[in-house]
Length: 478
Image (cartoon, rainbow, N blue to C red; front, side, top):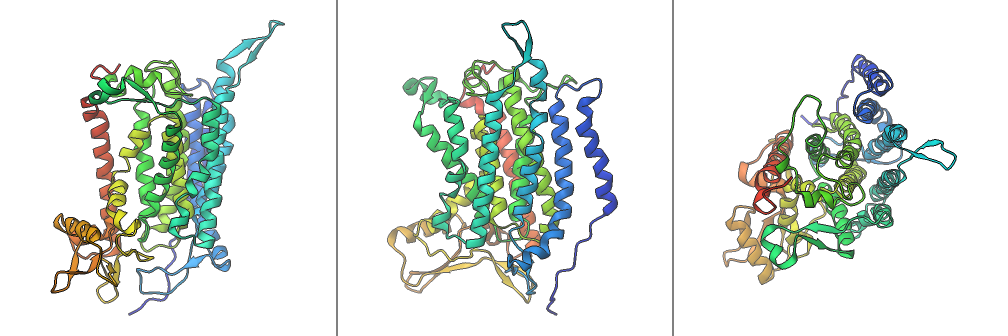
């Protein structure tokens, strides 16, 4: 029997009202004696909880408004035609940026009391951290531009080849302030290459190109994995949580917890941390501040993604659109660039890197690329099967060779003519790869497999970063 509507997902008012006092306590706590060692972190948690509450409430409340504005779509992998509000990533992005804006006074309040300068008249005046504030505001401006450009993409449905440079435009404020602050452009050279390049290599303008490409990859790699309920927001949620866990390793814990310092980076790597850590050694305040900066951006991101995932989970009551992908990708680029751990950040994108490499033959025109590469839905069995791309003419020798190599490693399934010419290939995405290797499954199970893959990718990333990195970087990394 074909259903015609999506049943509403109820929200517990008691749960939302119960979270509000908890969030308020975290915001007020830094003003109470004794003052905690990291007061800004408490306030960030409080604003994040309020962002979670706002996202949970506003997404279903504003859904009908988006439908009236013709921002709605049909779920391609369902057997009902009920319009579902789309582009609700705009709500998440608005709540996220508002939380970051309201947090500004709290992010720098400890600096107002901890640092002071003496005027010629002998008066001590608090020293305001203008450099840190400019970095924070430029990051906010890049997020706002990503929100605008992402929403324009949702409204005008920009084609792939045109949307690729959009994140570069959004990253311009970030790059300009980085240049104005004389941000570091050095990288630490791996041990096997140091006899050629030395310990440090100054990339100069190439470093800015690298940063712009990082923002492009972080944004589009999440967007390219869209198509099933919960896929985009679950990726962002797990990556953001992984970044938070990485940041927590660098904070001064009062309970005596200490990760072995040789795992956290070499003295050379820390000393050339750029704006945030110029000339500072491990354990310094500046090193802690740049990871606190990352936490201030990731905590509210986890909050809004968690709130939205409640409504985007199978069966979805709301779609994020490209706006959420743009904002989350830019947020990851911001913390990776300003926190100076872009290599670690890329490790958390291992599933996205695999998906991008697998998709390259279609993205660069070797293989036909249909507009939607989502799996094929079978209404009778309610299962998903790998979708296919059809060759209207025989593929080139290069395309045929690439596809046969992918088929040898069981990454794609090919349909061959008796003469051996390739007629069809499964679309080159990680979702279709899961269906090829694990067999047909329903949409809910497929997104669960994707989530497990993302979690395993983060576990592998931590293993590489804090277990194998010593093979290519200094052994004594204090």
